[in-house]
Length: 183
Image (tube, rainbow, N blue to C red; front, side, top):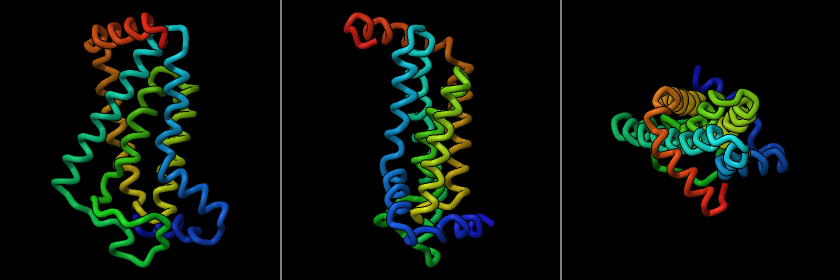
């Protein structure tokens, strides 16, 4: 089923120069779009939003660390290594599961969603687009994207419930940023 959904999305690759360009850019650089909701949270007036922006970066980092551990335990080949696919990016040799890009964007998006639903839905939309683009360009199966999203969710959930434990650190960092006129 994973491959069937992959084919459903990847079948459109290589057929439209404009769509291909958009999806290639999203697949390569879409993670940078997460700067938009992070900056929005950072420049809000309340310090709790700034702290959540910092914590979402921690969530993302932990999600990527978990991905690396899983990738060393379980190696899933990428779709292009196993099937005839339309590949729009250069070949990668690292494991397909779970998707690092998805863990990155969902590790941020879920935590922002826990703080503020409006910006959270925007962030999750970006994350979903990044995930779909990674399938479209032929580098990941849908299950890889889902795996990264789930890891991002659980790291966000853990950080959210432990946010009070991180308060001395986040308060300190927000205080420094205020003194440096960066917040």
